[in-house]
Length: 466
Image: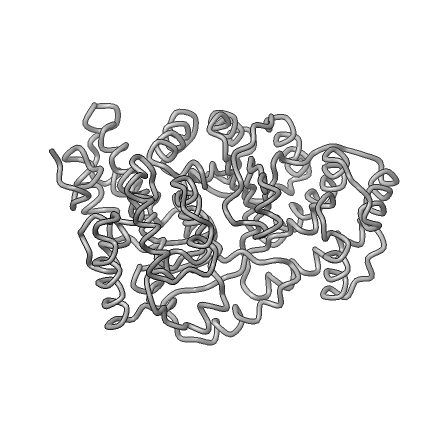
């Protein structure tokens, strides 16, 4: 029997152990997509307890707690920090097979020096030991990032954001860079509540009087230029299904006007509105040399009762099952036929689409960049051991895995960088098995290049980070 999450956790062959310990483990981290707060990084207030680090805003943990019958006040409510931690520990012991169990223990080991398994019996002891480590160490956001060997952090930012904290952070002598990412979802979702107010705000911030959907495009392009000046090189947009439905300008204008009047807009109408805006944005991203992230497949805010109580991003989203191949192809082709397709990273949330994305890449590759169109890492509900393995297998089967840009945290937690270790262990396990089975040459130099590329180097080169 193997020891619990020891030095060789997941590394089940001599080659896997060699690849991880000698090539992958000490590589820096390029976290090119996350939801960390630049304000928190700038203010750099140290955490008082592990509950603040772990349970503040982490919907992964809240979902697990709810699945174990834990009352909401221990998740998002006003329960005491120790009580919340105890309830999480109670739930975690039942999460056998869930990556949350592995992430939590990697974080306990790496950040707090605690090897004891966390469960209901050990919760109080570990809570006290972790808080003692916090008291005697530096658990501020900047220290957590720097001590995790992170070199690049790309936050997720709305076009109306003034990027104040990114600017201030650029003036600090940090060992890592904090860069904005352009996330225009609220300007795209004409079918959601709050759209008219948001468009008015976008107009004020951009200095554009928005009377039509074309004015929305003008405003967004101006904001993209502003983001570019502050160091942005990544955009991000999330869709249940990629939008591509062509329509006449007058029809799009009618849809926009109804949305601005607060009238209902159907899903199909929304996609007609989104199509010209995404085309214009994609062309702009290409002009600026940005990478365009496209996250596909989330079905959001399923629980109306809890959405009304807590709002979005609180753990009530799940996987959608829309057909994505045709509209995604048309969206990419509309840009590519005019030589305006930017570097693009495609993320799927439903594993039925692994083969769709892994084959879509090959349609639009070019010499503009190594693997210009990327199959993004297993994301959200797929960043499990099976999800990560299957994503890399699909890319290996159908593309160039050695040019893969690797993992990002997609997290709001400053200790979530253990997910990069988890990913690297899984990646080395997979490649190690292939080598030991004789499926790939035991070529030391090439294996080092591939493993270190997927761990860090490929992403740095892809985004042109210096």
